[in-house]
Image (cartoon, rainbow, N blue to C red; front, top):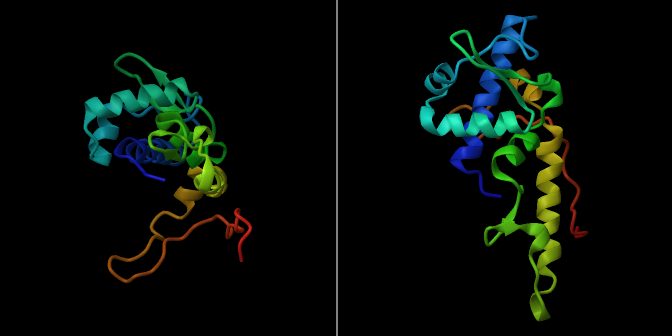
Length: 169
């Protein structure tokens, strides 16, 4: 799995919108207080022109609600507990795993390499297990619990260990 800048920016923007909704409490918009694209771009150090395309994809995927005008902005379309990392990644990047730029599902091999397709599908399945059960709310709950700089600690994750999808030991 390659995490593109687009995917990283999309997750950061969604977390910032979710944090605003969490901090604001009940508001008139479906997902909380509206956040302007310029404020998201500034707070997350994302180029505004790049972010606008990402926000459009997230809105089209039904993850964000947008309101136009001077008082407009973006809010979550669903609660943060119902939006997974996988939802966001698929909204902006399509397939979670690609082989030569194509979704793993369409990879085809023959002869001695025939088993590779099963490996790529297992990798895709393992990634999906983690990203589909990790929600924005999970990430916000673990705010500040990541590894300390340079101490070699591993980041906190809410996902349980993944069983070997290929069937090995």
